[in-house]
Image 1 (cartoon, rainbow, N blue to C red):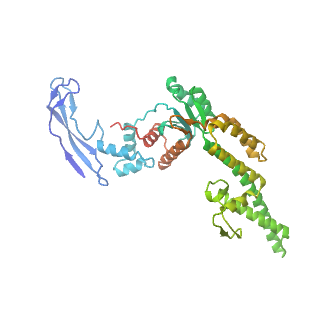
Image 2 (cartoon, rainbow, N blue to C red):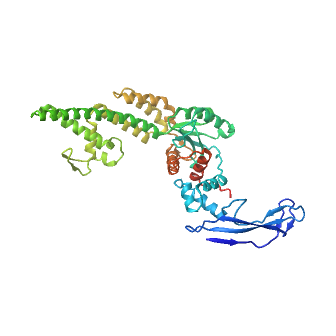
Image 3 (cartoon, rainbow, N blue to C red):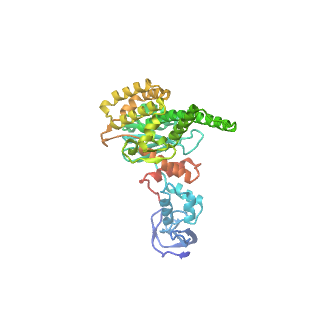
Length: 428
C-alpha cells in the first residue's frame, strides 16, 4: 500500500531566533515505512516542506506527526516494534518480517530508543548468575534483583570479584548503605563482595542451593548403589549365558543374587524420584496398590520407597538425613535455627556416608548465612530466597536461545532490562 501525503501550510517558529514564518523554501520527498496494517506493507510518500526564516535565513523542515529526525520509519511503527520486543521470546528477525524491514533496522530502532539505567540499590538485593553471554572476562553474567519490587536492578557481564568490587565502588556509599539484606547462592565471591561493599547488610544463603548441594550428595550414593548392582547383574548375566552354551546353569545362590541385583537396579533407576519427591502419595501407605510386573507384586509408591531405601544401609542413612534437613528448613524458626543446624552438622559429620561428611563442611562454611535465611524481612514479613531471580534467569536464557545468542553486550543488557522490567521508558 502506497500513501501520498502533503501537509497544509501553517505558521512555524524558527528554531534559531523564534520568529514566525510561513515562507516556503522548497520540498523533499521522503519515503516512510508505516507497517502498522499487518500483513500489508505500507509506505508513506511524504512531500516534506522546508520553511525559511525571513529574519535570520535559517531553513528547517515543518513539524509532522509521522517521523522524528531523519528516520525512515514512522513513530507508530517504532512504537509497535518496541512493544513486540517486550517479550523475551521475540527475535529481531521475527519483528523485521512482521513489519517489513531488515533485522538490522529493528536492532537499530531498539538501540536508538531503549536506554535503561541501573535502578537504585534496594533494601533486599539478590545475586545470581546465569550462562547467557560469553565474553573474554567471564562465561557467566551476574544478575542483580530488587527482592522488594521484583525488578532487575542491573545485569553485569561478569561475576568475578574484581569486576563486582569496581562496579559497586562507583556507587556512593550512602546508596550502598541502603542495602540491608543480600541473598545469594554458595559462590564465595558474592559473600566477600557483600561484606566489603554493603557495610550494613545481613548475608543470606539461598536455601534451594543448599538443598541442591545436599541432593547431589544423596544422588551420588544412589548412583554408587546402582553401579554396584549393575555390575553384579551384568557379570551374572554373562556367566549364565556362557553356562547356557555349555548346557548348564547358574547355581541357586547366583540365581538369587542375579534376581536381587535386577530388582535393585530396576527400583533405583525407574523409581529414583521417590527418594527426592514431596509427592504425598509416597508417604501414604493407604494409596491403592497396583500390580507391578517387574517386581511381580502389588505395591504403591510408599512400598517402593521402603523397598528402595532398604537396598543399602548407606543409601537409607543418606535419605533419612536428607529428610531431616528438609524438615529443618520447613519447620525451624530464627530463634532455634542455630541449635538445630548444629545438631545436623554433627549428624552429617558422624555419618557413614562420605558425601554427607563433606556436606557437613559446607554447612559449617555457610553456617551464619544459613541461620540468617530464617530471618523474616520486616518490610515484607517473609523470609528471603532466590526463587524469583531463578525465574528471571529462565527468561534470560529464553531470550538468549531464541536469538541464537548475542555478541553486543550493551544491546543484550538493554534487552534483558527492557523485557523483564515493566517500567523501562521508550524514548520516542
